[in-house]
Length: 460
Ligand code: GLY
Ligand code: MN
Ligand code: MN
Image 1: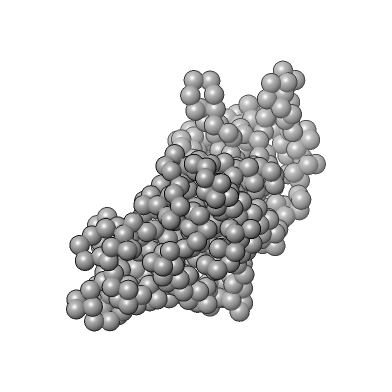
Image 2: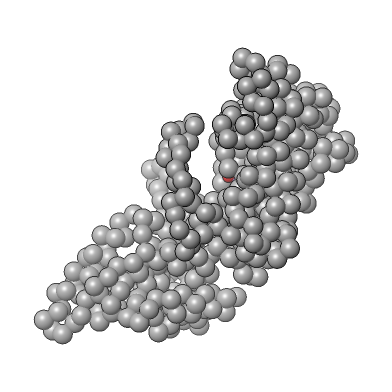
């Protein structure tokens, strides 16, 4: 699939401006402990433009469309230990770049590639040490000024261009995202079924048993990694937003919240389901579950081209706020209406995160949440939890091909005045949506979401 990467390079090159040149390195290898490394993961920007996943590589792209790749040289001994390398000779034909050299030549060749250009683009604040390396390369160009070389006078953040490109997914990307989503959906079903099966058989279930089911299905279906650390939270652990799968017992009568997704061919998926450990919701669990599901349905119905990113969150919050009053989670004598709950942000006690985020190569994908070119700041406020200053600007207008998660939740920690039957229940429902002209396509609905359908799946 070389052509899609060449097309993206051409699109990017056309935005660099006359005299522009861009430098895009891949990610470094990282040590885990002693001489053991973390499983290597390429840089998403670099992969987006090359489809190349070896470490120690860097792409240099000129405004005229010329592309120069630096990559690991062929090396029989290293290849015996670490695996086959593509090598610069094969890279030109395989990746469609104009030229390719060994990465050992990067420092020697880079200054010449920057010479007589006006602006050098590179991703700011994403690759540790890159800005200093660019400075060093520019320093070498300056050293040749008396021989007639011109040094670029401007540096610009390449993320500004690439983030906009990556925000709207092309057909190639959406096809992979659909496959990743389908694998993750199967993994969730597998974990739900194992939980019910083991509890029915009287066996002890731990969070890690369900995590093992997820990992099994991800790898069984060819996914290379998890897109993020899986959350498998039994009972009250579901109220810890970033809880990781651990060893807590999974008990009949309690809910389990699983937030997990695989990464497939460089693309993430991100699904949350909350289900009864033994396959039967209790009354209070079902009441809260149906409220979160209703809020998700409202958010899904709002997700379409032309709507704003924040409209989706507002739609979910409107349903949750009304539900919090109706169920007595919030005191009606203090908050007369859902509007009061929203304006005072009282709902934060039980719903403290946003309803979605961009998703793509990165689970929290790049791309601004503010509509470019619209005036701001609009308003400012403090986050009730962290105290962080939030500048509220008109949010992004959704366009076909954008991909967002839709993930409302409710997390009930025991507190005075909070009805006891709801204590320690944490529920989130998360699906991944591709924005279309008329609505959105939920690509993660291979796993059921209606309470009755979850119960039916877990009975079988
Ligand atoms: N799994 C991370 C998130 O839902 O944002
Ligand atoms: Mn998410
Ligand atoms: Mn998630």
